[in-house]
Length: 160
Image (cartoon, rainbow, N blue to C red; front, side):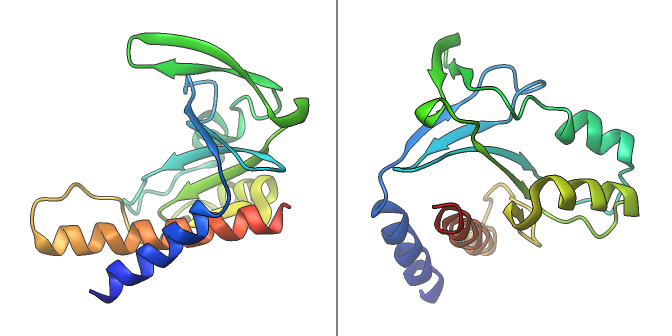
């Protein structure tokens, strides 16, 4: 029950700031989603890479760093494929944000690359985002979601 209270409080905080949310088309080249607050746009890439695989700089560059983070407009992904073009807030580049389960097993160069690119806007969940099959999974997913919501709220507040 405490997890639900925490999640509700985090969602209430997020609700105080109206946002535009869009999944982006072509996520091989573009980040996963765009979120807009009153003052900024945020491009968010999510990597649910929980395995202790030793991701190297080439993998990180190919899957994260080389994405199109600096565009001032992106194509929205609709359920039937391509969608409309959405401009970034006030025509400015959006703040890049990476949400990832962990980086500890990555090579040093890979860790340095994401920390250099995202700085304080690197959100590490320390737990995978898992499908819900039972009550324990549901509680785990809620706790992870609350943690991500809280950390994303800090990103928004820091970039005002």
